[in-house]
Structure formats: structure tokens, C-alpha cells
Length: 197
Image (cartoon, rainbow, N blue to C red; front, side):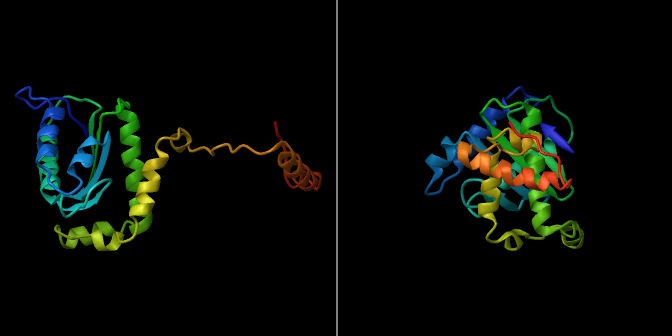
């Protein structure tokens, strides 16, 4: 299930609402936290923080509970905007708040990749843990994976990520010629077909 927000029924802008919420977040890095152009949050259905891109999940617990309440509100229907995107995957809620003017589909794709990375680390058996205990805290299972998620989020700047493509790397002319000669020797054996530019 995927959600995006435009306005509350009162016409109050969601971005204004999030600005008010973010202004209430107080920690040592709250000024730098609020200046970030894009935030990612992963939380459980019960509102427990699992992973924030920036900040400490324990200090953002109230914020996560607020996000969970907003998701519950949005599940009942609302108009769409690409600035705040929710992705609900069973008991896991993923949220992107972006001021980068990226289209909704791009932000949704980023959340899908973030969820895919989480499932790659934890496997789908995590759903069973949430079935047994809806307040299950999976944060300890993700211990030490912040660098993995941060690297993935950093890769979102590269269009190759969404095209499922390889990034071209520049090679010096002599290195490229040497590599092509080696590959051509292999190709002459009939193993591969070689094309280079």
C-alpha cells in the first residue's frame, strides 16, 4: 500500500504540519536535522522507530508515533502530492519527506529499494515476528547496518540505481585496450561475444 499526502481535510498543508512537528524535535543536532532536504524513516505499525536517515531513532520516537498517526489518517483517503510519501509493507511503514521536487514515482521507488534492502538483511521471516508480537522491536536485528542504508540512500542520486543498470567507469585508453585484448582472446574461443566502444 502506498500513500502520498497533499492536504488534511481542513486544508492545512502537510508540509506545514511536518514543519511544525520537526520544529518540536529537540536534540543536539536538531538544527542540522531540520535543514536536511530529504528524510527517510522506517517504523513499525505500532509507531516504533526502526531506522531514520538522520538523527537518533530514540530521540525521534515521538516523531515516529506522529508519523504513524498520520499514516492511519491517510489510510482513510486523501489527495496526493509527491512531497510526503508513505509505503506500507505489512507491519513496516516507510516514509520519505522530500523538498527536492522529485516526482512521486521516484520517491516511491526509493522507498521500495529501502524496503528491499531491509528484507535482504532480515528476510521475510520478520513478518512472523510481527504477527506474534505487534510491538516487536527489530532495531537490534539491524545493528550495524546504518552504513548499508546510508550507502543505498546516497546511491539514489545516481539514475543507474533506478534503471537497474551498471554505472560506466572511465578507464585510461591503454587500460581499456588491454582489457579489450584480454576479452577478445576469450571471445575467440567462442565463449562470449564482445562489443566495445
